[in-house]
Image (cartoon, rainbow over all chains, first blue to last red; front, side, top):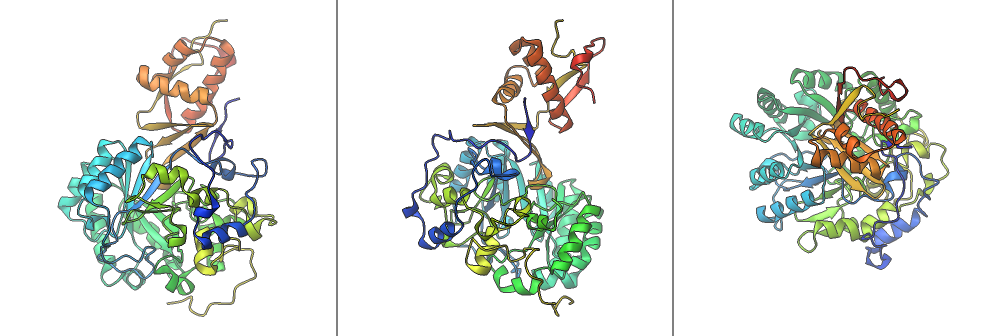
Length: 390
Length: 110
């Protein structure tokens, strides 16, 4: 019987080129962190998407590529602490070679971010090469550098998809996160992209301040013919410093799940699977796809399990020294990541729903992978937050 | 009875924007879209993946023609037609209704 399974397949042992990881090659902190999580579930025990992804794929489905650290904004929650260009950023020629390699591996999609991708000197050549190689492109931009001429030039590259960041539906809320005048300039960028008929999403990181503005964000996106995409705040990069202040309260999350139910066209980047533990499975992937369905290339060629896990102890390799294919197939970090156990969530009755939540969030908040997600909805109730209002 | 590949009432065609990648368990189908806007399915049948690739490479996406060439048993064809109809529902294929063909036992109509 042929089956079509969304994130649901058979574990396979036959990936001849996928060597078992050598524990000695891991950073000591990573080795200890992985060891604490225990054994990975057997194929028979694995559930949902885990049954499929823990076997590994021949290539990622999507690669997130932070192509430069240069950015004209300094958002307080920036996951990659972007601002200035970094000294060893990949040259345009190196970047083009990476595009070719990803195409040869049959990666489906590249998601460009940064920094601000339009501050990378070779961005046009890279996008054009992606187009030539039939790679689906998605560009995450702050929108402030989109001129009418650039929008027209981008339209010639279709199919290409854009995410323009707005972290609030008002200048007050957005600009406290993204900087002065960022709201107005992002709206102008949205107008220019929409005028060319480009496929758009308004991307919004959910914070306790933006939560009350979800309906207005939804309306703003609709006005541009765009979809709203709401993503989870992570304590990565500069996000570590503002995590406690900005991350939504549990009651907000509970309301958010209900709001999503009423707005099924809102996208979430599959980033809220930890909320499945409320008892209702949200649409999309129900586990971390890092190192299995996706990974992240950073400006200086570093490769990490995901964009939120940029820390030296979990660096899987560097494109200045190795090919992407070599890193994807042989990196000990990736191999151990794919075999990670359930840690302290192993006995939880809701584990099959949330798979323990986001490893990067665990690591940056508690320096451990075996603990529960800091936003686990089954944890003891949090103290009332007095700063929930602006 | 002898069945043709389109005796279920549809002639199936793979949409050009659908990408197919072989994996050890079978393969992945992916349809253009940004991150979570895209459509993605894992197919745990190498045989079906082979057929989809054959249709793309040799028959300009015409799956019915690929089935005609590759699949001889009526039972296998019926099973494949059911699978193709599932892929149609998921947005990877388009189906053209074929007039004057009928095989109720293998119907793939919803």
